[in-house]
Image 1 (cartoon, protein in one colour):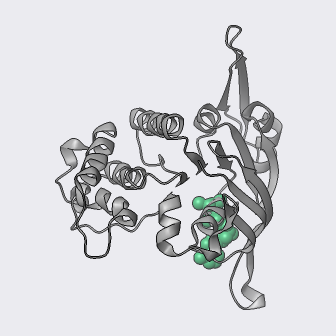
Image 2: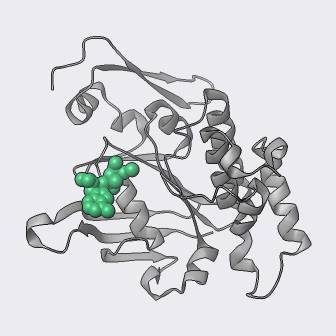
Amino acid sequence: MSGVGLDGVTVTYGRRASRRTTAVAPFTDEVAAGEWVGLIGPNGAGKSSLLRAIVGLVEHGGEIGIDGRDVREMSDRERAALIAYVPQQPLIPDDMTAREYALLGRSPYINYFGSESHNDRVVVADVLRRLELEPFADRLLGELSGGERQRVVLARALAQQAPVLLLDEPTSALDIGHQQQALELVAELRRHDELTVVSAMHDLTLAATYTDRLTMLHHGVVVASGVAADVLTAERLGDVYNVCVTVDVETDDATGDTTVIVVPRRGAPAP
Ligand SMILES: Nc1ncnc2c1ncn2[C@@H]1O[C@H](COP(=O)(O)OP(=O)(O)O)[C@@H](O)[C@H]1O
Ligand SMILES: [Mg+2]
């Protein structure tokens, strides 16, 4: 189990002052071990930049620690054993099979000259099965649909079995059934393996359903953070996304669980 500590994290692009963009203003949060936090916010809010900073793909200001260890002090291999990351726009080789690609998730455990072990193959086969990717396992990635490829990328990250999982819009190309299947699998792995999950998501109802807590970013700044029913108000969504929605909050009398449903309405406000 690993928590993620973020202390005054900033991400800035562009070296020249005239072209400098602050994508993430100082961001401070403590993602507890085993927690699932959803990052939401409109396009350009800074969600991907924050995830990229955690995984070390962009430089950051401030401190990011996994279990109190500064990510800057970790080797690539150490980091890969701790953090699995599904990028928003993965670059994937067309000439590799789905199974070979998913096996790359096992690389932190395979030594330089070594080939994968029986266990590596079992882990990959299990993830492929659970994502209904078995029929595609030996097909080339270049011959899969966008949604199938997205599930293969998720399979690679899950095969990595890292305690921290970062997902950048992992279900954007999936149909409603495969969205549910992928998120259910993440939820199950989280329970079973006590994964810590941070995911950027556009579907607010799905984000509310699966995460413990939502953090809403706007222009790189946190505008709200907390349980979905508090964060997702129609008024705030109107202000931040410039959208007209109604939000239904239902509480199950027996379990006390709340369901938050965001429904877009006709009559969007003018920009
Ligand atoms: N490589 C980059 N170089 C310069 N600016 C970037 C780069 N990547 C993202 N940005 C800018 O940073 C801001 C945040 O982007 P991003 O983190 O991708 O937002 P989100 O994932 O929430 O849509 C945007 O203004 C975007 O234009
Ligand atoms: Mg993004």
